[in-house]
Every structure is written in structure tokens, then in C-alpha cells.
Image (cartoon, rainbow, N blue to C red; front, side, top):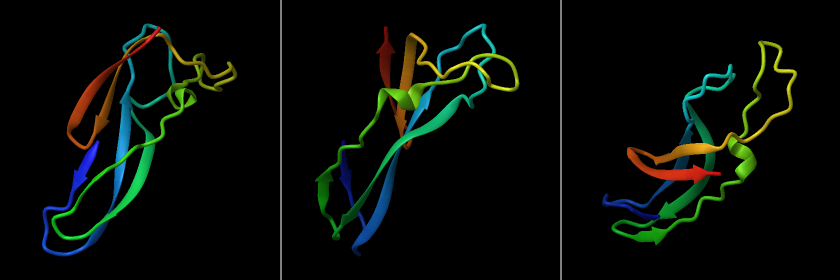
Length: 94
């Protein structure tokens, strides 16, 4: 993504990427929106920069099962949404 400093001073920000989990009927102990990646970027006034946020597939894993979370973590197939700030994009895991 491209990040732009629209201010008149240099600054540093942390670009945060969240995953929104698909709806399932299993018991999954995970919040509906989780932080899955981030990158720090420093920009001068008016500067724009292309930023890549590394995202490992394992960051999407949840632990199905009961409250003690004894099952191994796994990535569920289905449709996910990735969100950066207020922007969202679809991601399908098959």
C-alpha cells in the first residue's frame, strides 16, 4: 500500500493490518478482528512511500475446541477480510 504524510512535519506511524475471521459454527477462541501484521514507516512532510506489511499465513490460525484450547492451531478455509485502518480487502483461503 502507499502511505502519505499529509502534514507539515516529519512523522513516524505504524501501519497495522487486521484480519476479520469468517463465521463458523465451531467454537473458535479468537476475536473477530485480530492484528496479523504491521510495519513502521517514517515520512517527511508531504512524502509518500510504498509500504509492504509481511503477513504469514500462520497469523490467521485459530485454536478450535473448548475453553482449554487443547486442539492444535489451524487456518480455516473460507473468506477473510484484511483491514488497514478503515480500508478492507477480501482474501480467500482454500
